Image (cartoon, rainbow, N blue to C red):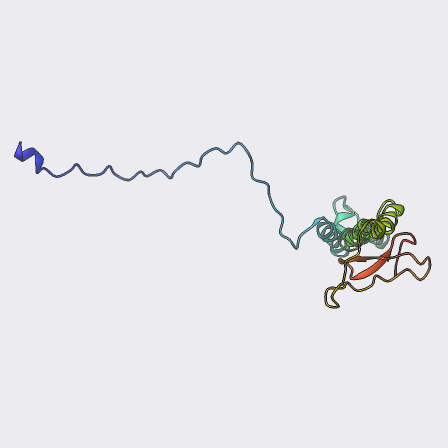
Length: 172
């Protein structure tokens, strides 16, 4: 008995030569594009490539070299204008998608669908609220400017740092 108690433990199993297999994940992880890359930039890149191909490979792309005839200046020029024109249209379209569309969307979000609801709520609010007995000068809110066109109170839009008149639909 004493001999079996002092016997060394068995050696560990040899390390596996095969790498660990990844587990199956049924829900795929969405691929995130870098913040600097968007669809407008991709479209502009394709447009730049088309213009480059038009400049560099107009002769080869026109197909004039394979049938034994020499290419003509006219076929090269025609193919250049086709590729360059499509390329420039893609560049302008990508620029619009990247620069102009976000500004247009931000402007349409700032203007509300109905212009009467905010004006009615601001007009009814002072009549329903009781006035404080003695407001301190430091706690008083600055006066809200009125619209120079219609005379109604304006609303401060923090995103643009300006006051906006909902009834006239313009910034003051």
